[in-house]
Length: 196
Image 1 (cartoon, one colour):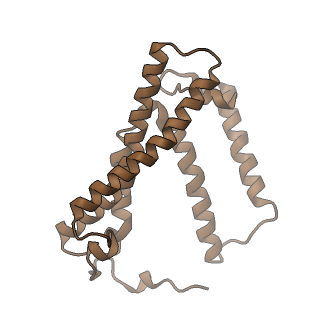
Image 2 (cartoon, one colour):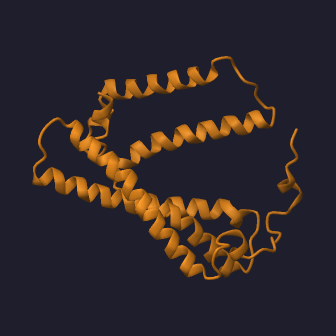
């Protein structure tokens, strides 16, 4: 069984390292590192969401008019801002908390900056996309919890367990669609039509 050394360290005990060593070893400037990360995240996010939104636009099966193109471009820009906000927000809050508190501790080394970055970025994304993000993140969170429990020998592998979890989640998602819960105006999104 692997050792968990974080149990031996008090939560508020300082971790003596700088953000240069931990967050951005390629430069001494926090601002320069954060701006560089933002530009890199922006380009990667634009590539990802540009592809997703264009495929969604093409799957509608009709020639897009000006309004469709405008909505698609606005969606690409907003979703790109969301994802790049997540990427650079993590390092932004890491450096900011270290400067504010003077050092890192168990909570400020990852948990609090990740939470603040997520809250900051989810407020950028439009509300109709938040349901799809919830479905994606809940899947990743469930897998992470399972892997953590398995690593601590709290659970053991079940034969075809991954297929059972996948089947259950797909059944729940299809039930959600069959009941028509996705059709309400506040949750409508073109991405739902992909599953049809």
